[in-house]
Image (cartoon, rainbow, N blue to C red):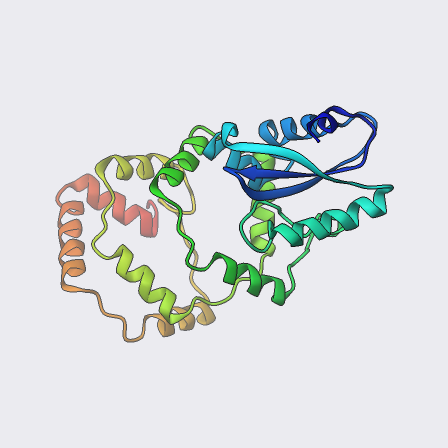
Length: 263
């Protein structure tokens, strides 16, 4: 069926394999589109399936093959067959890079505020549980991200989406795991220098003149700090930092100004 990959104006369902294993099902339609052309879009444009694009960048396109597996008579038939084959090969719920269940579902999922049903979330969670990327795969994914920068508009959209997302409170088990992983970790001198440089002139961090806190805020802080005790190592580090800060007149003046401003 390879000759069909070059035909224009046909309604095809195609299957992408990663090292022989089915990993993506897609559809081709329109007078100016072929299966080969669609595959080139997947390889070079992240907008045409982010998961598949990332996989191609990570593994290399030489590990992928594309084949036509079905034809359709009209758009409705095409959508139904895409859904059927995605479910058949398990490229959405199981191993694969389909970002949705296919067909018209993609239109619904592009609407702002779309959320997966709880049943779908549960299935996705179960299919991903226990899966671990190899060190080689992690390195390839990391290498593809080096040097990539979001535009200001993209950053703004990410910020708005993040602010609107409903966040569940962190479980005690998750807190414990994070605490164990972060205990004993320290920033390198280079990282400290970068953080310091990035913070300079940030009115929310350094030298800010904060107004008096409201009674409500004070009460929240008090409740959050109840029973909290610093470790011996933390207390020693704080004492050493304080001594260093007040060892010079400049340090004392900077500390005083950060709290009460200049006279």
